[in-house]
Image (cartoon, rainbow, N blue to C red):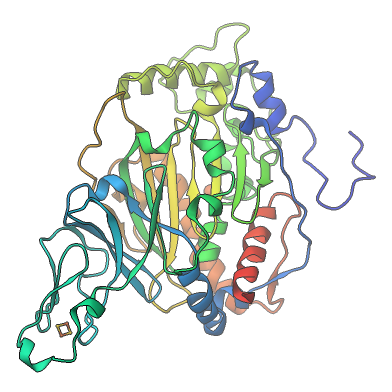
Length: 454
Ligand code: FES
Ligand SMILES: [Fe+2]
């Protein structure tokens, strides 16, 4: 198509689009996967102060984090009464706990006597009650005040008024979400298209966490996740993937205030890759077993998808024959504002989360999880313990990641501290985004502004 007459935001990489590639597979795919919803949201620079300024960070702490739904844990993390997970974001901390009535509650993690945190940051486990380590005030697993040492000295403490304050709790797809705003909109409204797109063939409640790696990053929580919201960086940062990964022709969608998506293909060369390749040569670079043959008339993409159906199907004891090649191969990433990415595809079933650590705008905790589907009737196994890496540790030190994937995440996170220093040393004072490929980043900032303006 002649692109000269197009408006800003309408230009695309020449050649086959992601949708063209998926439709050319000739299979039935979920309609949402071939729905396009691009958005041109402007082309002004985004100021670096939004990442580095303590004043801006402080606004987020006051107006974003206490007002927004955020994923805190999986329901299977807290199956029994008394099981809990501590969730920390910026200065906030909540204890997510299952009560004896089976209800999940989220208690603000601060003693009503003199403020001590009842549980430690990041702590998870089981407890028969919530007992403060300072003077021993104690609450039940349902948050009712249970005992106060020297009760005679506190005639002004009314038991009913001294229940632990709670945040709102709801669940979707096996994820527990909280919102500290008692007037928050319901979670299912907040999720917009997520349930409609994901609940059918990609039911996340029937997946379980197989790997959980946490890494501390020396950058702002927005900049950290923005490195994962576009495939524009692949050509420079992950050049090893160009023979078999669509990047410049990835698809970017914005579905509402809280949801955006990219889809980028595997098993086709990047539009940047200059060398002609046979389908066999593409397959040879795709981390398939040595000696994998692409028969005449087949594509590397279909052979790779078949191999994963067989290999992952055997590993998980599941019939994966109902999934299209795209679901078996492609990076399909939904972003849920403010800080969650979900990949509902079968072979890269990842979830990301990015949270500020404490009150430093330049520190972030990046949670990376791999899920696996459960068999019919299979119960969730015991939750895996997160492995925590410092900012200078490699993903190769975390068990459970394939080496090529670990190397890819190292490439991603290695850029971030350097970028953050560049925010501070810049004379230009703002970033200039691509109109299409970086539209999800601009969308994130515009939605954030709407929260800060409330
Ligand atoms: S601060 Fe918790 S019991 Fe005193
Ligand atoms: Fe990357």
